[in-house]
Image (cartoon, rainbow, N blue to C red; front, side):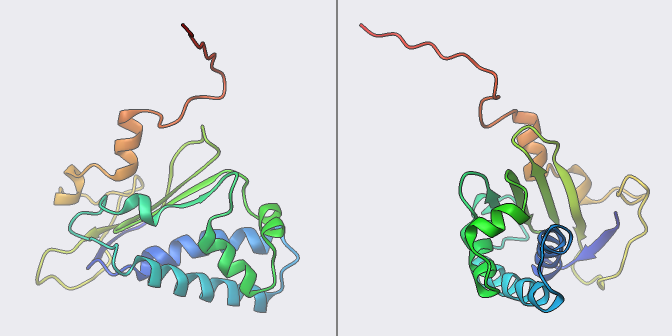
Length: 181
């Protein structure tokens, strides 16, 4: 993984998220290159339009739920829309994509989780540039962090908050007791 210095445009984050989803179509599907390209471009356009008033580089967690792409018992409507543009039904998309997927597209970070109990993995990570500094690639260590401390190092990401606070849904093995009067 590489760490970049970015101004807060959503293009690299959207590109990372769309590239991740597009790989499933390439690997699992009987989708030709033209369809994959059209899906990719369509989803990039759809996400950019959807997120344009919900992108806050100064507060990356703000709007995170709105920008979350979720596939579980329902297909994410934005992914479904891009799929329909290339002739895929929702049922076909369910066969091509993970049945349980959460994809967070936030300023400076794109993360995903496959399965309700899966680990959260980072697809893309960057750091905001200090004002007046040109956008350049920063050297990063194998852990994905640069050698010097930056304001981003002390910031807890939305996904780290989720991990610290614990699960937001019950595990699959739970007992429920009801009491009636």
